[in-house]
Amino acid sequence: MERKMFYWIALLVASCLAGCRSHSGETDMQTRMRTEIVTNVRDSVLPFWMDYAVAPDSGFYGTVLRNGTPVVDAPRGGVLNARILWSFSAAYRTFKDEAYLKLADKSQRYFIDTFIDKEHGGVYWLVNPDGEVLNASKYTYAMTYAIYGLAEHYLATGNSESLDMAVGLYHTLEEKGREPQYDGYVESFTEDWKQLDNYDNNASKTMNAHLHVLEAYTLLYQCWKDDGLRKRLKFCAELFMDRIYDSSRRHFNLFFDNAWNSLVEMDSYGHDVEAGWLLCEAARVLEDRQLMDRANRLALDVTDACLVEGLSDKGYMMYEKKGGRTTGHASWWGQIETMIACVNAWQISGNDVYLQSADTVWTFVKDCMIDREYGEWYSDCFDGEPKKDTPKVSMWRCPYHTVRLGVEIHNRLK
Image (cartoon, rainbow, N blue to C red; front, top):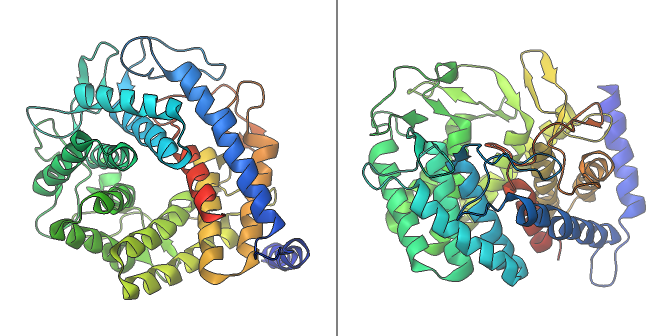
């Protein structure tokens, strides 16, 4: 507790010293962070994916090692490819580089042709490089990223096929993925959308799946002002605030049964801060003032709790806490979501302490997580030492978080 109190006092002092503002109201820290982060994303992260992840066939490798060597026979995941689609689409919409557009269009075509189940609806989980389906199970998680990627492609290009596909997947998820008694979305199904007998942690519903429903529906609503979608997006936002959030702990619960009973007490700091700023975004898109006020207050509470409990002495956000045990390594995506959440909290509150916190995490990333030899970032650091044998491209290792950092910081720190 004394260490955390000292940390906050130090941040307050630092914000006073470092927060010198120009006549326009912009701080030197804002300018530097925006320049450094956007430059890293455009000069290191995106080039790695452009140079090494693009396969000679119509798609993208499923696994690429740290030095850019592809594992050519590795399976290819629906989630990874939806995230690639979102990343290059968002990069083009933000930075207007024609090279990004080319890969956005390529990934849109590959995703639709390879991962959309034309018979049963939904998205395949895993395929071989030749397109043979390895796992046709239907996951809410994969559905939401498909909607997210296709909606972003539409916003970036105006391609009506992408919007039609995103809307079709939304209808499929609403028809087949919702749980009828208590509402919400079931974690996963068989190929033809039958219920499973068992789920990980016995949880048929998860915070993570619903987080990405919220994320996808927020973006889709920007493309398609449908009343039914608006109601479902508002339902998701209120679900997070009323059911998933535990105000006594200032954290979100993670695993639930169908009746929304929490099954495990566990704090995932990266998911917590991510949910906070995504709730603010959903409320803003809905233009619901009452919801915006609630989301802003909740985002500040969650961000504060995670900074106090999860920020390490070395300046990174730790991974998670289960019971009394903390998993203390630094994941690449957890640092990204923490930085965005801190900038969001700074925008809400005007308190420069949050901007300083974002810069503290960014300083750690610069020192420990950016791979200056081969490009991109290391996926994990343990006690400040990067884990160098982890692939840069895999089922779960994608450009989406890092590109989103560049997009969000570019737009928020103008």
